[in-house]
Length: 418
Ligand code: HEM
Image (cartoon, rainbow, N blue to C red; front, top):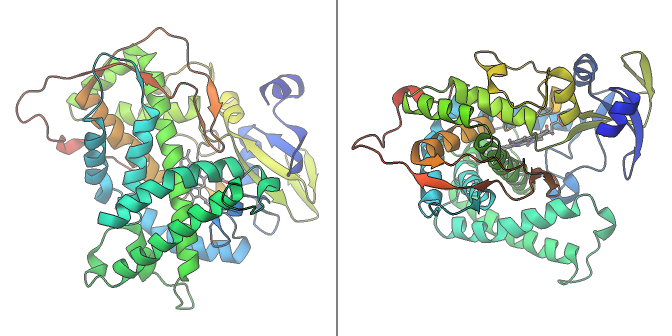
């Protein structure tokens, strides 16, 4: 894509497997026009993630069905609700890092993966006890296999438990059984209204016609929220560690800020990690109207248009290769130049959740550990199916920080502002 941009400029057409002729854009003005295009002109690209997530997943819904579902799901993920989850994110982080080795290089990605998995299971699923343990076993292979199979639809044939699709369906059946009993338990909880987890809110929500989500839609949506929210956030956190170890000046300013109970530079750093190393490379739609105006062009019916996220970030920011959180210090990013969460009607539903989670995990890591800077070359990008991860998993060398009594408490002013 970068080579094409150098040769053809910020917009060009490529032929992609499954998606056909695809217009790649990365000019913020065109990105804005595209994300503001109405749903009678563009719809979610087909095939999309619902191939593995199920027909009840937000990803697969189009038009009115998509709008109704978003209306139901947006309130549980609203920024104002996120504070309720900060405590459990910190708890899961501390539990995971208790066994981190000192003075030896290791990859942080397996750890950040476990943290984000546990956080979603507790915050979104409301899982605990036996269900939590069972889901922790079944989810990693299910998500890994699903994200590999999503772009290989010709393998979607059930040839028994030894075929990849057969294995995927077997794991999905296990997931559905656990989730069925989880939903029964949560729905029967006499304190349902006091619960904080997203599943409880989904169970109590009603569409405009008074109906509730069906059981199979609930299961598909829970799987979606976990699949979309766990690996992405874990991978972005691994990139944060990779970036910070190579930028010791930022690292030491961050430690000072965290110790003082502030969070402005930390928020700016999260924005810059997502700009400099976005984990998802595109947000795509298909043209369903006879034509779609875009900049000086008319895009024909049936074409796919994709915002290339890394290229947009390169185009929109001067000296874009440089990792520089100060770009975002005290300023919110522009919605059409900074697009790690996509945009428009399909912008990531979990953006506020992911931001809160990255903020609390990083703040906790910086408070607990001294990260040893490195002059090693940047880690290369490596595709994990859907997300792009640091090739070596975000290598780190850490030492535990020596704290004085009482300094374990989270400074009051350090809550995430959203
Ligand atoms: C750093 C972490 C994350 C990144 C980079 C990310 C990125 C994205 C992107 C690029 C899209 C497509 C947007 C578009 O097509 O315009 C998306 C959609 C979505 N994301 Fe995220 N995401 C993250 C975390 C999460 C979390 C934590 C959740 C939920 C717990 C979540 C749930 C979803 C859902 C449900 C959609 C589909 C929205 C729709 O089609 O209406 N994501 N995400």
